[in-house]
Length: 190
Image (cartoon, rainbow, N blue to C red; front, side, top):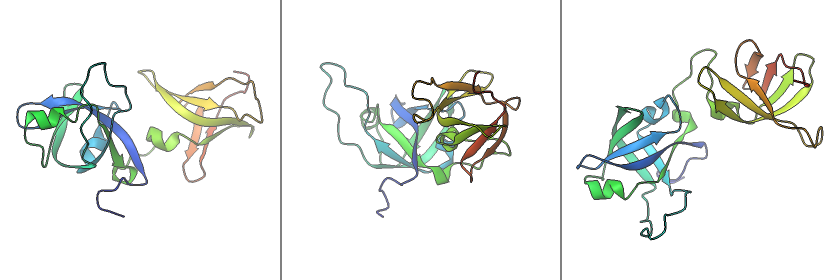
């Protein structure tokens, strides 16, 4: 694999929203309320924005595939970073809209009982009676806690709606990442 090729375990962690300062700093909007993944990796892989360009906007410039990070730190509700080979405001601003990916292997190790959303998505959810409730397709941040979005299997319930299960100890009995399973105290009729 080339040194700057997108890793197979790449996860989107933020977007460049513009330039910061006059010496090529970048303003980044993290996709997580805790941007530790952005701080843990010194290599950010870029992809173009998936958002449509505003009418009359100039065509996007080709993006570098890889940014080598000198420094990244909290700045208000975002992150500011300096990177190698970007040393003026215009070059930094040209990266606005780019999506930032880092290898999942670069994420800091979570504490006991903590999980990254990316690790929960795709896990099967079963209740205490062993009934399969579906698969996690996403999570919702509500402030006090997260909520699992569980999609029932089409074969089991073609007309069933997505289940929303609070990701709290009162309802989640356990998470088995290796077994790709979450056990919950949840009735299928809730």
